[in-house]
Structures are given as structure tokens and as C-alpha cells.
Length: 210
Image: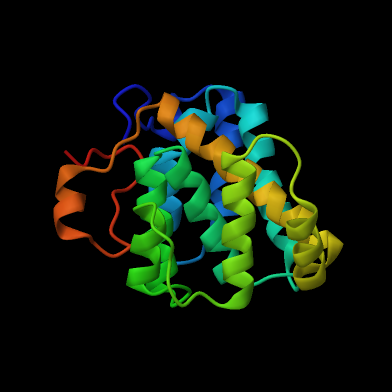
């Protein structure tokens, strides 16, 4: 949790924030159905989004819409590779850890692959699509100026035009999320670092885990 923006019980939020709270949890329930995801996100991401609740709600809607529109253009594994590249680049440790745990526990990446990306090393044995997504995300984040023609052509061939633009949106969205959580100084709890718990282990909204 963030010491700067800790979770607040729903009844202590103003009316606009309560609307955003309900919208956030409903969207998280639909789009992140694995155990513990809704409470975890309510404790970590939502307090930041609640500061500007209408803008925060747009953030959530963008993620849900992006997942819907990119279905069929690239796999969930590609999405997690891009997410890990972006969160690692911005050193947003908490969200990097969550995406790493999700990717491994859902069978999208091996532990070695996730560790390599989060440690800044070239991951071995990625599928062709994941390798291309990795290269594209790294270029977008680390190189100023246009995407190279070679990468553009490869991405359009593999992901089609819609998937290519969707992949770029994922890089941007996870950059947005990483910067937001860095401002909140959201750290990985020392207890969690030591035990590496399953993604379903989280407190209820408004509860402390200290």
C-alpha cells in the first residue's frame, strides 16, 4: 500500500469518489476475475485514481476497452510481456511484481522469462510474437523518435494494424499506471518480497497489511 495515498473505506469517500469506487470494482470483477484481484486493486491503484475520480474512471474504461478491441490480434502472453517491459522500465516495483506473478501463475510466461524481463535481461525462449512485442516495447520506451520501419512492418504482419496500435496503447497505458503508482510511492511490502505469495492473497479494502 501507499503511505501517501492509503485505501479509504467507501463510506468515507465523497459521492463522486463512491461512484468511481463502484465502477472500479465492477470493472475489475469483470476483467480481472482471478481471486484477490479486486481487493488488491482497490487497495493499491484505486486510491490514486480516486483523487481525480472521473479521470480515474476513464483509465479503467480504457484498459477494459483495449482488452476487448485487441482480442484476436495478440495473446495474453504478449500483453504481459509488454506490461512487464513498461513497468520495469519505470521501476514501478509493485505493479511489476503483480504482473510477473500473474504471468507465471496463469502459465503465460515461465518464471525464468518473467525474471529476465524484470531484471533487464533478454528473456530466453519467448514465442515469436512475444519476442516481437518485447522488441517493440523496448524500442518505444528507450529510443526517441519513430518506430523503425522494420519493426513497424514486422508488427503489422504479425499483429495486423489494429493489434500493432493496440500494443502501443498497452505500452502507453502501463507507462501511465507505472508513473501514477510511482508518484504514490507504492512499494512491495517486505513480507511479500520474502514469501512471494500467490496473487490471491490480499487484504480487504481499507484494511492494513502492516
